[in-house]
Length: 237
View 1 (cartoon, rainbow, N blue to C red):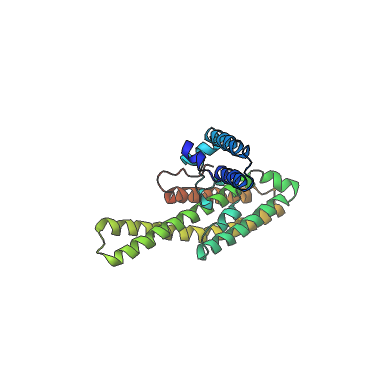
View 2 (cartoon, rainbow, N blue to C red):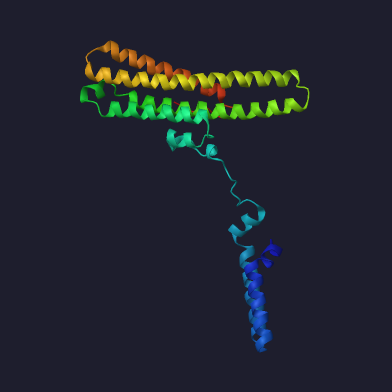
């Protein structure tokens, strides 16, 4: 630590400047003043906890990808923009556009309709987050599957590798189907909200809407857990 403090650029610069002035002016008092100042800077740097953590490597902040950020307070739309550009992201963004329209349809409806659908908006938020979870898991699985397929081309694939690749492909297909189905489900939910706003006294319509939303959330939750790698915690409801 003392060596690092002694070689700290700002401290060395102070020593060089003092020596330069002494060589130019030959003022004898500059030499002890420079040595005292340099020694003080080295001493203070060696005892500086921030400098110590930096030298020991404890102060380094690892770079993280957007997916590593705590997403509990991040909107699903923003999380969707972290997905790689491609068909999956386009489908998710289209579904989230409908999701926002469903939320707006509920929030701008009359008092009676909002009272009937009082707990629908939080469940819609949950469904949107789980949809993005599924898409993120799908992209991770696709990346691993791509690597396995590439490696398989350079060597005879083992039975375990074939099974892993087959399992990943099955999960990718399930995620693709669910993402497409979610878009259609959200379209249907928007239409059901409009029908309830017209006929809020009909409990059958409300029950049908609640059943559809609960079913959507259940499927997304199950699939998001399936797509979550071991060691990661699935999103809580």
